[in-house]
Image 1 (cartoon, rainbow, N blue to C red):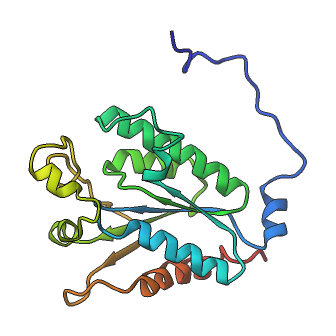
Image 2 (image 1 turned 45 degrees about the horizontal axis):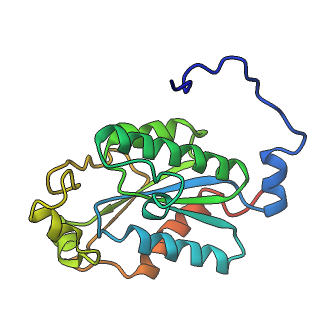
Image 3 (image 1 turned 90 degrees about the vertical axis):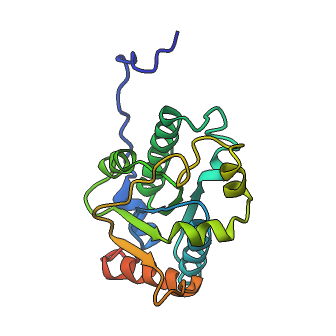
Length: 208
């Protein structure tokens, strides 16, 4: 029987080197950039572009990619609603650790349910959770379909696919929204610039 909720005889261990000291060492402030959107909306592309731009500025980041995590940490989870919720909870906890380490953690997941994303936001101090909504139309995402998943979902070979027969709940108060302009999707560098500029403006790229 699982003892997941029965651990009571545990205590938090404090250490003399904390988040403040780690941030001073790295000259940056830990945070979580949470990129959400439909499959094919460009989440992974943006995550890699942001990481590359931060690296060029001498800033340390780490990407938590939804698909990659399902090869290891979350390989025991499926795509039912409860599994999706647990998937996001685990990623949120790991992202929190990276943020506490002083890194800029870039989480790239469909994360379709608003309550799950909000639960991850609640794990972190105010302003340290930056939600980035890839607001791309379903038609565009489906036309890309690099993994062939939309085609399988339309054929009924994949059940519970977000945007087809499972809902995607749009963010209500995201920090950054990336969308088409005049029907044209921004270039990866431009999208990354938007995110990095936000981090600079909010003081995450240096320690005062």
